Image (tube, rainbow, N blue to C red; front, side, top):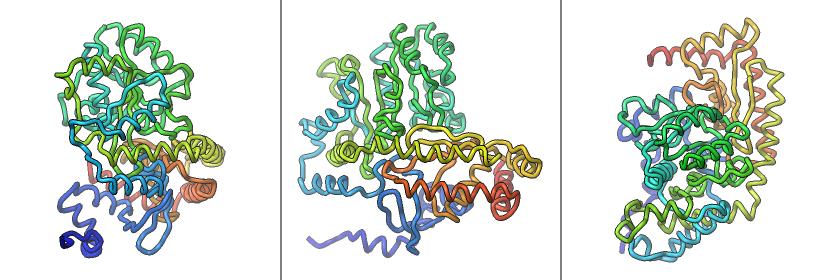
Length: 461
């Protein structure tokens, strides 16, 4: 057989067209946005918490692909597992057999949540949430799921119905009959439960948008209310799970919390093969799959595929052998404490919060007249522009990739690979300090860029 496809040759020939190809054939607004803020880089390779551009410049990744790269990029253990599973030529996805890898990965995952007994494997975080919503409705016989204001649980229709951000929901109605309650408000939860039609509450132990943690005691209190009303607690750990917050699951930070369903994804992939998992109680699964003629009542064509299962097993092995959960807690505490020490130094810096390696840096209205005029200009055009003003020089001047934590938010979210070390912390804090020094000068290139953002925001109205 002749080689009909040469990936290296194709990339060598056409790789330079990457932005043009996206503009013509994919989401045309993505390259436009990247060019506007100067993020239209060409990255050539990556390893761990770093990647390099075509000129060999090193960049520090404090974004981890929105949390997907928990182990960093191209971890050798995950790479070997994928080579091994491909070389094994398994009879994968026959649909009418029981391969060992899904059972082994389920067993390994469940060992971290001993009160749960079963797993459904899908292909993404939003699919894990969809599964939890379906299972909760079916198991309880009730139609309504509660979610917290400002939550993000995915963008497919069911997950979008429990999305607390109106910008994502607009234009996609009608959605499912779900209701938002404020994060931390047990009285609001109790009022909704009293109506008798609630199947479950779905909650992120730490919300990705804005990096807001559930207040102490909230998850435990919510669990007690839900059980009293025979409703379920769903923990969305798609971003917070697998060590991100310094516990294997973020809900484990609060003693006694035992969700009925847990959603995971992102880092479980090892950064290679999409995978999502919904962990749940035995009785819920047995109610959904109640008879042989319901064996495929909920399934996924690529769910439990060998490559995804092998990647997941390798990820869990590395998390345990390299003690990355503990590492995330220690390194996260170091990074957060060093950033928090800057709050009194910079009047534009309002708060540093989070847990483990999930940290939010919030900016706020300055006290001095010199800075207030610039801040007011940005806020009048579009809330969130100052945070974008910080993100851009972090990349362009210091080669550090970060993200604004949500639309119309003056918050930067740090979710680096769990393998970042003290040298990476030093690099980020040094760069952030330089950017804040520049911002507090009241002029210069940073505020020039701010005026450019204002013009762009006004033009887009």
